[in-house]
Length: 392
Image (tube, rainbow, N blue to C red; front, side, top):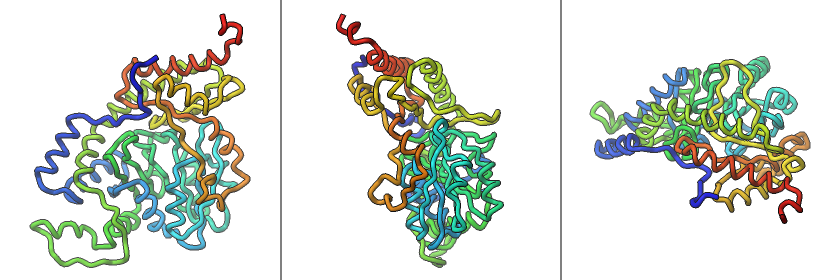
């Protein structure tokens, strides 16, 4: 057993990020400024999207993305329940109604078959999510939605490093909201990015993100700026700081290197658990140009085969100094969202009792990875052993 606790996640930050932040502080521009614009340009180039707007969270991107898409009172927004609450929260803040759909048991994503059963005449938008960074075949969803005049928003919180048939999230859909939270593949500690190819959406998001002020109102503190500005409409305080952007620029430059390590760890897990009774990894992508981002490594625990429940496995791993997490408690089970529940979510309500996220991040050593594998297999093998053999 490990002597030291292995946390579920640890950000991959080194001296390059520290130097970039220090330089930003020394230059004296701390809030939204030139580093934010540099980060946006770099992210747009990397993603292939026409526009990238840096914000202070993925939640902010989802919220003003919904508003920019025209979502409002009387509208419905279809989304999986097996995700973080931000999508449903932002839908309610826009005055619309969240409608939860089920997920596929093997992929843990809401595929088109799951989504279309929840679509009604009131559906204004679909929030699709590449769960854990697994491509969700967004082309098929976009084609279905466009035929019906429905906007597709990708909750791309897990998607940095992912390719969906060779494309980044937000290049095929109407817009995507990325997260740079501390547990994500690219981090700015807190932060997000909205990407889109729609000029009108990008323009409105920029205005809404900083109190509804004129585009580039931040320049009033530069030599080329003016103290005069206009507030076009009531907006929000959703802007990113230059300090966060400075960190994000370096993280984006290192993304491919970090992604290769995530790929290595994921492949090691997949190989090691291929014959472990009751441990069922998320089903692999199916298209040749797909790439899993491996923001999380999620397995389902089949208690009948494994001989141990998901909850008991979490506790047994904790006792062996292995951290884990659960992604997610379905949104419709929370007190604030029970009114929006549905009897259509049979897969969601079954699989969430089975899922566990194992440690996967670039700074894990090979020994750390082996410790996780050994701990999981030991827990399963101990439960599978006849009681007489244990006593002997």
